[in-house]
Picture 1: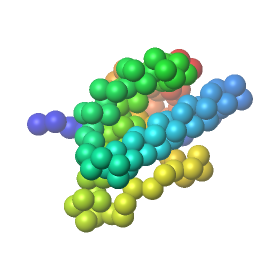
Picture 2: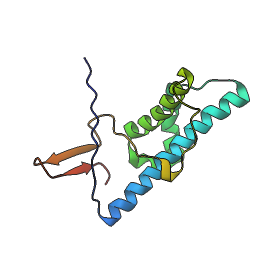
Picture 3: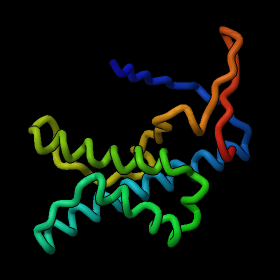
Length: 134
């Protein structure tokens, strides 16, 4: 049995950390919109449906062209691509509307699907979050 847990943290970053976190969120938002545009344009122009695995396999080449994405980590980028795939799956099942492009204001954040990329240090009530590259 696989157990999935979700942990949400309230952060109190320093000013420089806050600037970097906002920058990372903007990069993830831009990746989300690029994946959405890729799927939409490929279907409208050629009638081809793009899968999650197609877009995931493009990520290494994408990171070579756009070097600012290298510091984000591959798992976090894959989860952003997976978010686009979930939006389309919900649409095709009739559970939601067609996925929309996101603005920085309406993009909620990103995910570290595994235990790599972050570590929580806590004493019960208080603690701190250690994030990679921050």
